Length: 445
Image 1 (cartoon, rainbow, N blue to C red):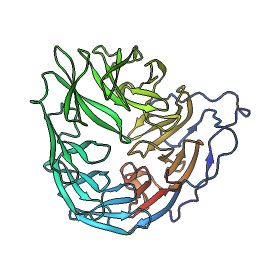
Image 2: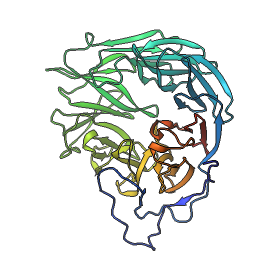
Image 3: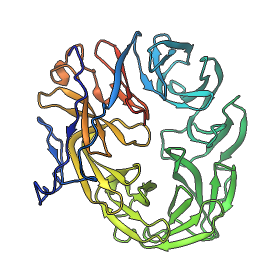
Image 4: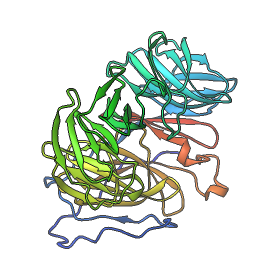
């Protein structure tokens, strides 16, 4: 299509006076086909009409031969022919700098205060190149992908095995300024026992924060990425552990009894049986959800919310949840490919406020109050929309050209799942012609 539609808000809220009995949540499994259906429960947020605010500004178009396109905070990074990378200003489309990368495919970028880390899949494995954020000049090049960064961005931990669920055996912490080694972790260095990752709510991302070692006998040991040292947990055995803010939470070997510690001091805080009855799954991780702590159970698609002070279970839902802002939680149930049903849950009770079928959230970092979504339109034309979680409204951004994926026209992204991406501040899409379109959130929240 030639022009983007105006950002007109579609109010999804329903007054309780109009419908005292909300429709039941959708529970149908399987792939959603043909028409996208919006199934919405009754919701009223503070009454009144939500303010009409445009979801995004733009788009602007970049003049470049687009390869992989990755959005940053104020910059759009584009891989070009000949192992090049170009950085464009997201507001003006102006080329900021151009640089060279090793042979490979650009996988993701990590922006720090003065450095941009570019992680690539190369014939030799996963590598990371550090570029000056202002000029694109190469600072250093190392094997591995960043799995942790310090709050000040001065240090990152690289793992050459990423992506892998294997035991970490060759982690290296490096200084982002010059790539020098700060510490190294290996299987030979740790105490005898099994090693497990910890996933924590760190610096705005779900990131690895350490390694838990549970020996056959004796106290468990935590290797803390922040210090590069082992610390002892005052318990003998643990199944897994996760970090949420200032809490370090472990589970017992029988996957049911939780123990929380102060992350800084490792002083025991509470014990909980909040996961009793939840199907056993080792892929659990924790996150902040509203004022509670949510523990997700991976393949079991179940999430339990705990009181962070006492460990008491407050609610449980059959959703994989994503970290949210304020008083809401985002739930997602995959139905086929990258698409599925997205839900907005009330953070205090876990009640479903809204469900949207056949959606693909474009979330590369923790969700914001506005969530970019790809949905299949009624005419089989993929649509890019923005969900305003605060007001439960949706604003259309653009509709791609007609036809199915087998017969798309030149204005349709060749693969919408990979061609549209979002950061905290901007959204990018690549059309079939290679044109890169960039939108910025209107309020830049």
